[in-house]
Length: 437
Length: 47
Image 1 (cartoon, rainbow over the protein chains, first blue to last red):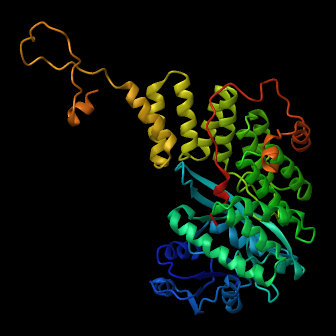
Image 2 (tube, each protein chain N blue to C red; image 1 turned 180 degrees about the horizontal axis):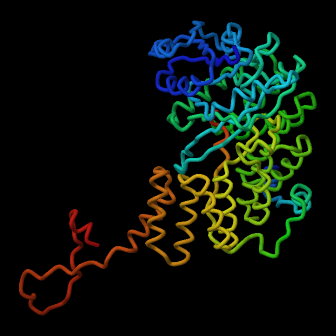
Image 3 (spheres, helix red, strand yellow; image 1 turned 30 degrees about the horizontal axis):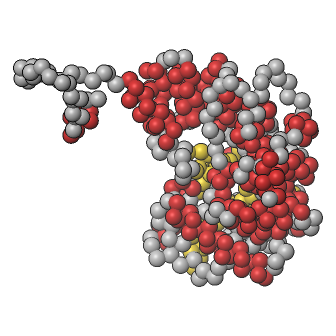
């Protein structure tokens, strides 16, 4: 048996079937550890032929994951969550069959699909994640939350490689904000438990920083990231990733000079990473250094590029072709080079015709060229793909307002009033009036 | 106070050159065009 797909689940009836259907073509078996579902999770799993292990939830994600791995029979394990989907599964089997004996695991890409709360713009964040590894007694998950097998693979004497032809889609944006916040609050509670047992656990410190930032506790998050960066005993890739997180946080709070210094330090720790260049590019763009931002965006690894190599940096980030084209188009637009901007936005749409950002960029160019009808068409296209994004919605409303025909003069129903001092006409009221302006 | 001082520190061109190498440009880096605001970093932290 080549591949066991292992999941842990509780009350995942909304997402589970989609996940299982995505792996059925390649999984020799699917093992689900159910930690106490009260919905149809188990029924769905069994109907699709999964082996279900029942295990009470005991505040330990690793223990639950390891319970599934312990009964898995495949030579390789792919761990997933119910809100993830495996794309291009055909790439998986050949890669596993070709793996040399020293390879213990693979980083694969997970594409987090998000919608930003404030702006409503959707986005995709592809990160490298270690989810595919050998079924070996020494390879197990560690950490009661944000569990990972990374270090046990190294301790077992194996190497980890990148497999950039395999992609998981993570449906983050399908969860409402309240549930995301509740999830993060749950993670924080577990991270605090973990740190109570082992205050020097740098993984827990790193993830605590991320969670605190998500929850808006920026000062505490900053302190956690700084602690990991300075901790010479922490794994180097983790320190480098914490340096990027710190840089992003500093950048977001306006301290961009210090952010760039942190990025330099992170790159000195792990030179081959992509995340640092992404944070740098966003920082430079925010600071108005558009030509330098261009150079930085061009150094970010392209998603699903098997030749680019994936680093061991936790959460190393890359960009889809269309997202990079959008960012480069934005840089050229800011520099006033409309022709180059147009070329990038158009190439982004060649790679991903649904990319709302590229349509928005082309709308802005159309507007600059005085093509208001073209701009409106593009903006409508943006909203078809990205209906919650406020900026194009507002721009479209503004254009519609400006392009409305002048107010019609109501026909006079009665003879002209007698001559006398003119008084301002009363404002129209009601829906007809509001629409006639 | 420290934060306020940090916020005032501009991006160091030497550090930038160290990271990116020389960026050949005849243009004004600050640009004169339309700026579409880009993502905020919170989006990293959904999982």
